[in-house]
Length: 493
Image 1 (spheres, rainbow, N blue to C red):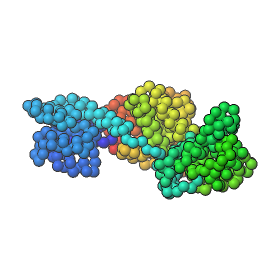
Image 2 (cartoon, helix red, strand yellow):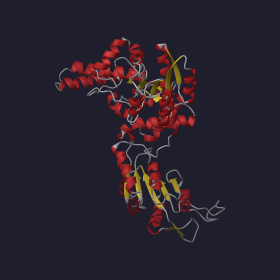
Image 3 (cartoon, rainbow, N blue to C red):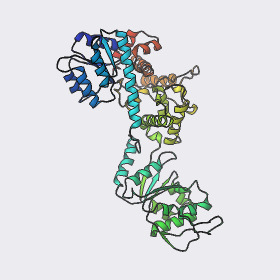
Image 4 (cartoon, rainbow, N blue to C red):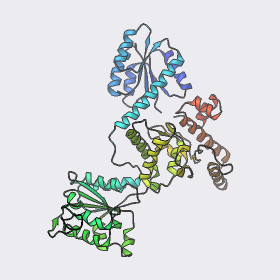
C-alpha cells in the first residue's frame, strides 16, 4: 500500500495527522518543506498528498503545480486558513482534489483523505484500462523461453510447429511470430483444420474454380492465396485428413498448388505456422500422420506450457482479464480477495488460459459485489484446496510490499460455511503439524500458531483494504491486539 504524504512546516500538524491516519491503518510519510518532498518524488510516489499552503521555501500552490506535472492523477489536498479564500480558489484551479480549512476537524480530515485515497485507486484503474493491451503475458520461466524463441525467430521465415494443450494460447504465439517477422506487413490468415468438414477443407485451403463442384458458382481464392506475402496459421494440424496432408506437403516442398477443379499451378509465397494439441510422433507411428510432412513442419518447435505449469502467472492474468472484461462491459474492474485468488491458483485449468479468461468474464457479470470472495467463484473451483496465501504475496500483489512470515505454509481459510469435520484447511494444518512433528522441528506450537494468526490477519486486512480497526472488529479482537500482532508477526508493510 502506498503512503499518504504530508508536507507542513508545523510539526504539530504533521504529528496529529500521522497519529490519526496510523490508527486507521494508513501508512504516512512526512516532510517539513516542499524541497524535500520533490526530492523524494524522484524515487517514490504517494497515494495521496496533503500539503500546507504557506511554507518557508515554497508555497503549497507552487508545489501543487510541480506535482501535477509529474503525477497528473495524484489527489492533492491543500490545507489552508479560513481567510485564504483566494488560495482555495487557486488550489482548485491548479487541480487540487479538495482543500482542508485550518483549524480542521480531525475526523473530517481522515474522511477527506479516505475519499482522496479511493479517487487514487479509481485513477489507477482508469490508467490501467487506457494502457495498450499486451500481446501476451507471462513471467514463468517456461513462458520466458517462449518469448525468447519468438525474439530469435523475428527475422526468420522458417516454418514453426507450436505444440500445447487446447486453450493455452497457440494462436497468440502464431500472431506474435507474424507480427515480429519480415512478413509483418502482409496478412495473417488462420484456419482451424479440425473445425471444417473434410469435404470443404480442400477448397478452404486451396480455393476452387468456377464449376468445380455443385454450388461453385464463382472462382474462389483459398487461404493460401489470401495469405500471400504473409503468414498462414494451420491450427490443429494433427486432424488434417491424410489426402490433404499430401497436398500440403507438395506446397511446402515446391511452393505450388492447384485450386480444386483447376489446371494451372498457383505460386505460393506464404510462411506456414502450424499448431496441434496432439502428439504428432504418436500419430506418425499409428499411420495417421505423414512422416515426411511431420519433418517439414517440425523445423522449429515451440512448446507452450499449460497453465498448471505456470501458476505464478495466474494472478496477473486474472487481473488482466478482469480489467479487460470491465472495459468491454463499461464497468469498474472487480478485485479478487486473497482466498479467491488462492482458489484460482490451485485449480488445474484443463481449458488453460481460455478457461481462466471465461471465468473472469463470468465473474465480471455474475459476482454479487465489487470484491470477489472465494464463495463467489464458479462451483468447479470450490472443490480445490487453496494454495498457501504466503506463496502468492509476491505475485498477487507485485506492486505492494510483501508481508514477511518466514516459511508460511498454511492455506488461507476458504470463505463460506464448510462441512463439519471435513474442512480442507484443518486437514492441511494437521498434515503440516504431522510433518513438523515427525521431522523433530522445535517449537511446533509457536510456528503453526504464528502462521495461523498471520493468515487470519492478512485475510482480514485484504477484505478491509488495509483498515486495521475494521479488520480487528471483523476478527473479534481489539484494536491494540491487532496492532501488536502485526508487529510481532512482522506483517507491517
